[in-house]
Image 1: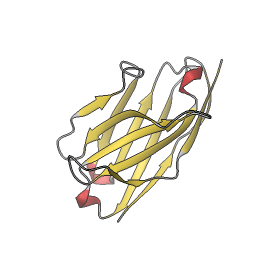
Image 2: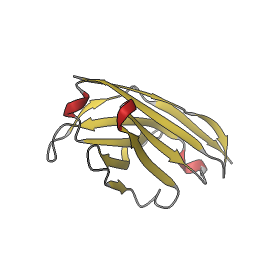
Image 3: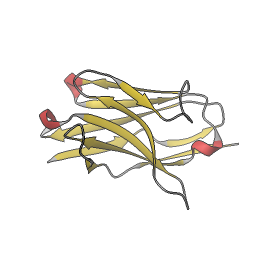
Amino acid sequence: QVQLVESGGGLVQAGGSLRLSCAASGRTFSMYIVGWFRQAPGKEREFVAAINWSGGGTAYADSVKGRFTISRDVAKNTVYLQMNSLKPEDTAVYYCAVKTSRLGKYDYWGQGTQVTVSA
């Protein structure tokens, strides 16, 4: 089991920045990919960014490329999502999740943290 706890959400004006954290505990040695997803009211959950836990390779949704940066601190078992130039359409609950294999689904999910961007 891997436990995930997100933090860092809040209310920010458009153009502002926030940094989300995802702290992992438990069987962290089994983590392969750590991803960030978001879900806005009335919309489906969507992929935001992901990072390979061991190699550090990253991937981003087109909607956040150039504005968001995902990173990790292996010593702290923590993944970060630096969000700059925030837009009202970035408003959502943000979740982190873990895959324990390359081809598998995301096995573990955090409880989410609310990000609200005002116009």
